[in-house]
Image 1 (tube, rainbow, N blue to C red):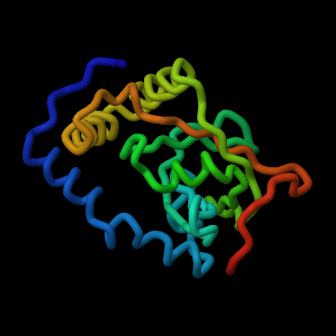
Image 2 (image 1 turned 180 degrees about the horizontal axis):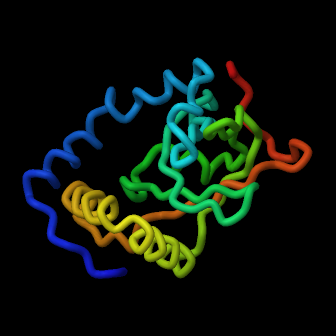
Length: 170
């Protein structure tokens, strides 16, 4: 990882608290469900996935850390292995994605190998040093682990609808 500037402890604690606040992290879902996700731009996406036990459709809004090709999004589990969305896509990789002007489309999610994940995080830190500095400090405080251990997931848009994506309200 690239060297980062120290983040004031107050900022780290405030960001960590916000990221643990359910209503705050779930609030963008309402915009996507009303077809207004394009207002949030291309750096965010809404991932619709199936619950690993319930089978119910679940939704989460995530930051896109890379877009290596038009049909691929790369996201990171900022809460590590304990993220429900991560555990759900491991069990059911067929998902739906909405981002920017892209409406809800079928896709397949898969976790990247550790070496590839470390490289993605290094590129993100280089491209967004201020955001990385704040977020990595907050994640370290919340998780108590190194950021290079965070799971990274690639989401590939289905060509011709080949993915078994969760059905549900669009």
